[in-house]
Length: 395
Ligand code: SAH
Ligand code: SF4
Image (cartoon, rainbow, N blue to C red; front, side, top):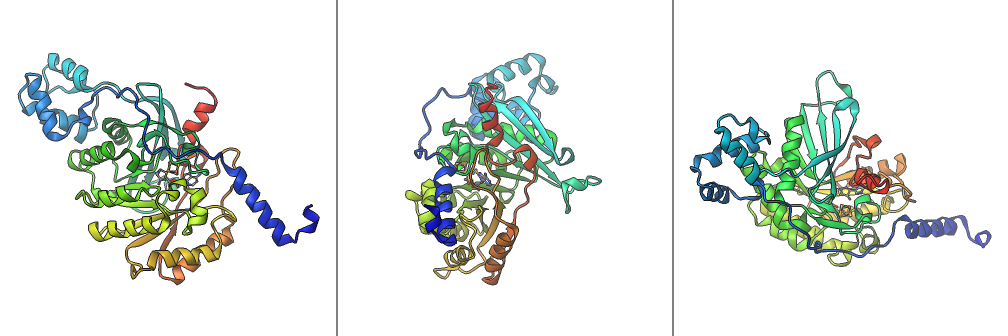
């Protein structure tokens, strides 16, 4: 009976319908299924454990530092080429500490080869992906302006249990947590392509739901691989207690919080984890993270046409961020045009709505940028490559 409805009511009804159809409603999965552990690897061990392992194998302790230099500092993962180790030892070290964790399944490039996305198969057949983006490459305008830098976007879980309806990874559910070494291996592989200046945990998975392994991997990246903590961004859909825990680790990585809307009513559906940890509590924890680390927090906000991109929502977002005397200096809003998943009823915001959203935040002196959408033609967003591969049965 749409003829009885005013245009405004019709629009509202269509909107509700599209909300309902946008994604399957999946249950939240906070704990990963128990699966066989990946084989033990050098990068699963803390520095002291590496020395212990070397001693236990009957080798002198200096071998640990040698192996560290090859794998962590030089991103060389083939012990056969480590000529400062005796030949016989190379084979033993390879067998004992360097099982193959990642096998490339498919490599896609975009932006004149400066964006490289790899789909990896894990030892048990699960799939993950990572993306390397190089910027400011001389002579390659497609790589964008500015100084030369390179960012790796990596995965922390195979799949994700957080069930966000706009996210391809979320729609596939959670397969398992990655081990620390599986996370580090993505960094090592990427370092073969580019000298990394940044690493973002924005591939598949909710990093703070795999807290222990992610922390181990972070300590290796900062302590052993020489990456700067501030160049590493851990992105979370809002596991409030874990944000508070991370603040106390003495590891000042950059925190990104995927807020996507300031109000609990909508956030309960966009980010189902909000039903456990509401937006206000998550923002409180994010501010506490800033207070503890001095690191400015990023608020991620995917702009979805007519769903979360209204001007009044920008005002409410500003209220939430600067409220409770928090001010503006602690936070930066990253607006990301939605990259629609196949079959999704949702799409990116109109240009004018996005512009107005920015204007409203700027009026309140909230720092805001619209994130670039590198690699869009190769489904650069979260988990879409693996989703395509699953659908076509490539495993
Ligand atoms: N699970 C973590 C990190 C991985 S997702 C998190 O949610 O923060 C990385 C970012 O990609 C998040 O901000 C997420 O909301 C965003 N994202 C997921 N699907 C997207 C899509 N289809 N379009 C735009 N951004 C998306
Ligand atoms: Fe998981 Fe992040 Fe995707 Fe949500 S947006 S389902 S938390 S990967």
